[in-house]
Length: 299
Image 1 (cartoon, rainbow, N blue to C red):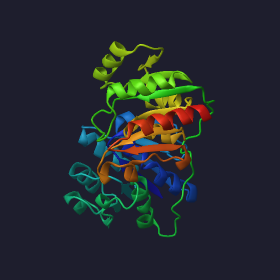
Image 2: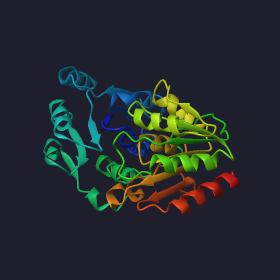
Image 3: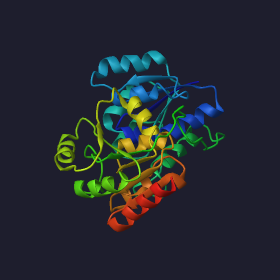
Image 4: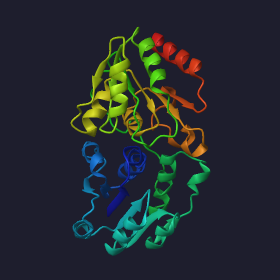
């Protein structure tokens, strides 16, 4: 059987689909291709349970032809919109599985009622549930970490203070500076930045009065993931790089919004819970600072 699994949105959303992919691959000999955004392709190519990737792109005509050429038996989509629905419908995939959400569900042959807005599960667990619509004999289980890297953890704390507009809960820049200064007593401190984080980077450069490194020249998402995996702690808001830390089971300190939809109850990393330090708004900064120091002293 040949399966197309789609999650064509942001980094963190893509990561939440990986347990489903790994679970299917562990239990079957199915060929699994993922339809994903360009930014996620370098990471997807490093994951042994993904057999191939298709880049989700604006040229719908060539994209449709590429999908049709694979002659997929089934598609599974964790997130849907009208454009994706039409694309998969026109590709003539016989069985098309998706959550029963939005008007786009009309383009799918198997619609799974989930009501994700209730946040009764984490996002990746909702995705995992779609496996039963493929074959109810399959088990819902996967292994952590999702990506094993031969990387030795160094005494580095990474601060990633930007979020690309995808977070509802974050500390202010000055609070990050306070935490970074405290962390610098115990470890090397590195600030990382994405392509949309120029404002944050300039603020840090202008207000820093202690020893740090700035790193923002990553070749691609996989190189960034490798660097995160070499650290002892990754500190950020709930954003894509936080989920990259989870992929390699890197310890995290993460900040989430004040609604249940934006909280850690839905968006916590896919990693060992003992390695997660999750904080939901409103933040108790003194407690955050205390937990950081305790972690650094213990590690």
